[in-house]
Length: 302
Image (tube, rainbow, N blue to C red):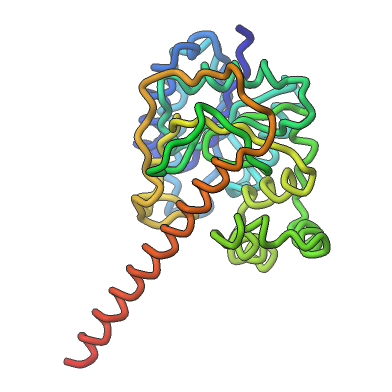
């Protein structure tokens, strides 16, 4: 099997990075895979020691076919680092598997990614492969397609990445012009359009919502596994863009994903399950906010 280069983006979390690498090394295809690590420069002196510790660790990584380390000489920030790094790797190798420093993978992650990259390499309908699936309670197909793209353990080809448009304002205007806001927001179940508005205003620096919007507007599909292959350990308030939450924690699959007999069309079942999960999450969030409000009222009442 042809193996695609794994590209890992790291910053200032040595323990997360170590867990990500150790899990990745347990993958069946790790020793046949080239690993490329992009390490960002500290934004301020406060992160310098942690960044130095990460860089010291990544220089010790083994267990892969090769390890290439790119140490930035200026602080790129997450979005710019990923956009620049992905562009450089796909331009050189034609395809890529992308991870960040807080993504612990199933031993079957690389197998799934490489098999899918090979299977859909020439299928223009498919823009990317994704390894994470939400901790839903309903059953999902073995694997399925949804419109757009995603960001927690993913892969693409050079032809797929050409869809990416970094201009958030253009993307939002086009979604509105085509009257696709509700569809973009999973039938109103999750405010992705508000996230895109936030990126435009500068309240977030999400490359991921622009990747989703770019692929969505291009009418492209992403393949998802029916069982989770990525656990994001960064939702512990340690990252730049994430607060502490267990809402997205999903158990890793202990079995391989079978990619035979997958219909290359949007899955109505997958879409509905995701919508239901998003709606339940919004209700859970409202419940937590209500609980905090009640607690505050009681505190003020004293």
